Image 1 (cartoon, helix red, strand yellow):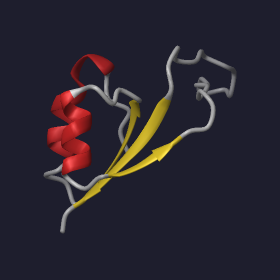
Image 2 (cartoon, one colour):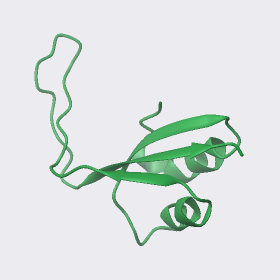
Image 3 (cartoon, one colour):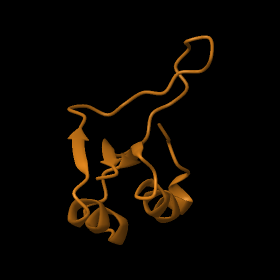
Image 4 (tube, helix red, strand yellow):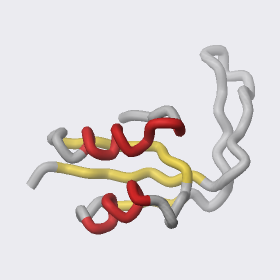
Length: 77
């Protein structure tokens, strides 16, 4: 599982295709090159119905992104 830094998502997507199994928490950006690569590469996409909320180690709310999120799952054939 990986929640990549949003500044370097593409590098993590490319790395995911070399892994046996990868689960990535990503922003929904259907107009990006890395999203297109995920779709064309056969990744399974799971959408959240609502915006997610992050929590710190103690379980306290730690913020929420201002955009929708998704989970992309890739696996080696």
